[in-house]
Length: 431
Ligand code: SDX
Image (tube, rainbow, N blue to C red; front, side, top):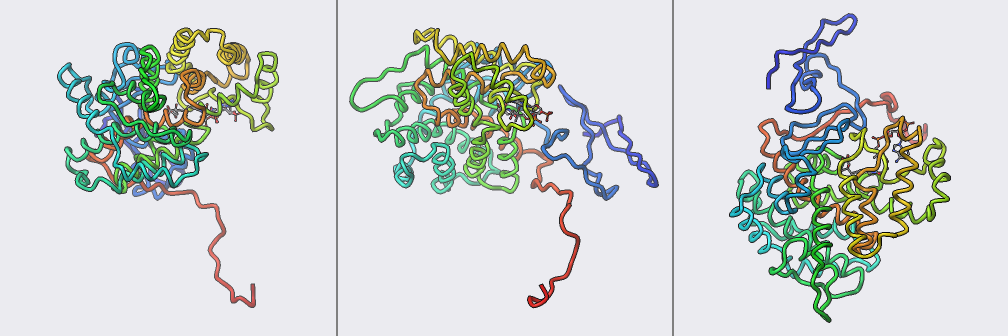
């Protein structure tokens, strides 16, 4: 990817050094500094990766200023309206939306892989019933690598495709089983007569005691939530999956690492934290008190579901999520839901406050997702599991892109060492 345009590094007492400027299809130009250390002996310092492009990718593009999110070039608003989650999964995996024949073939393959090995189902017994379901997911998803040895040559496109399909198919079962185990209810095995998201809701809320047919309005809402969470460029958990995969680790172990990273409240755990925050605020009359706390540098409290590293305007997913939330509450006759009304009032007040305006803090994808998931009957502790279920599609697409990149090499950042200078060990008696 040579470039005519150059950035010149001028340091006193040194010869100027040129670096290529790489131009993207969309987004920021990048200075190619891969030869910086070799040419100058210098490293760049960028903790938190505020100004670093860690890879080149064709999968997702975000414009933080415009509030734009594209999956393989398609705007998230159009995908959420015109496609279902499995079509989006196919798009992220292959780069194109499926035609009718491809759609049926892909759905059929996924349906044939939704069961997990019976011995895996016994893994759940090893956890306490009150274990956080994300802890269960880290363990059970990682354990998938103990079961599938016949497709481990990831230089083989067919093996990668089998792994992709397997994990996308099994995640809903693994998540639903984690929920059932926490409730002390029997596992509900997948039904091949149901589509992907309807089957997930059946495995979550069905019981052997009575017929359960998922509400199509609620299924569509959850399917849209999956689409909104499917991928998001090089966020913390995706970067974790890429870095883990760069060592050649198998995809199941990499996805398990991504789940662990997503769990944090600054990342995927924010939807759970946001609902807890709304419960803590309790009433619109207390909103000013919490807005004040969010602005207080001495108070660690942050407005969960607000702010984003990239979006410095609105998060397009938050707008879509608010609409999904409104539809679900209307379907369930909960239009006057206390938390939803509180959330909308909190958003209104925050967006009128100069602190939030100046720091460009807007609701992100997690702000409304907790309210709508709670209305769907999903317990708070499961919110991030739902996020992980959907994001596994993006993680697998990013993992495959990384290992098939001609420039692929193990990720190994350096550091700015600020520790103790070199010294010699003294004999014990002299310490
Ligand atoms: C996700 O990266 C992704 O794409 C992630 C994600 C995805 O799809 O993968 O979009 C999913 O993780 C969404 C974000 C969910 N997290 C939350 O809602 C938690 C609350 N938000 C914050 O923790 C924070 O906004 C982050 C973590 C999201 C972003 O942090 P940054 O980019 O490191 O920004 P920052 O922490 O440096 O904040 C900049 C300023 C700071 O003030 P100053 O130090 O400049 O004075 O804004 C303030 C912060 O104090 N600030 C907030 C705030 N978020 C930032 N103040 C109050 N409440 C907040 N929520």
